[in-house]
Amino acid sequence: QVQLVQSGAEVRKPGASVMVSCKASGYTFTDYYIQWVRQAPGQGLEWMGWSHPNSGGTTYAQKFQGRVTMTRDTSVTTAYMELSSLRSDDTAVYYCARADYYGSEIDYWGQGTLVTVSS
Amino acid sequence: QSVLTQPPSVSGAPGQRVTISCTGSSSNIGAGYDVHWYQQLPGTAPKLLIYGNTKRPSGVPDRFSGSKSGTSASLAITGLQAEDEADYYCQSYDSSLTGLLFGGGTKLTVL
Image (cartoon, rainbow over all chains, first blue to last red; front, side, top):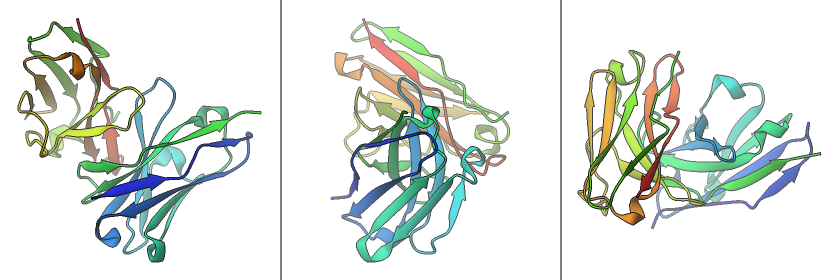
């Protein structure tokens, strides 16, 4: 069965960086896009960007350009999202998710990773 | 501005029918991009409920249905049950953003 298993919760100070990993299994990793979506406490879903594991290509939401980097390691079927220059309003649950193509529905989601930014 | 607008909350009694609207613009829903709907139970990841405007993934009850017209889409839930109480999000693609767009979410309360 398709699974996306994310790394555990993180606590960072303002200005630091964080990397969240997303281990994929149960399907051909290079055939699907990985979307990254975050959700601040009590708030809605916010799209951050996507990567395609086959090509390594990425597209980032304008809001995060310059601060986010999405990468992958196909040898271990894992996608990564690194967010830098963290601020308190980056405190959120970060989800990786699978999509057939860049604009399609998201059919599988990771369990989420809570990133807390606090001094 | 590229936004998908949903009502913040809707409610209904068990057994009733409710609808949740999702209003977009000419750069997303109105441009012909598909609308998808997700259900999010408290403390869990979103779950795909409707894709391609009207299609249900395997395992989703036929009490859930979707529609799309012009720059808007709707999710209908019939025969409301207590376990339907959740947050619901619409999603589409926006050509101005060249990325995904989510609605603000609608909290469904089963009275």
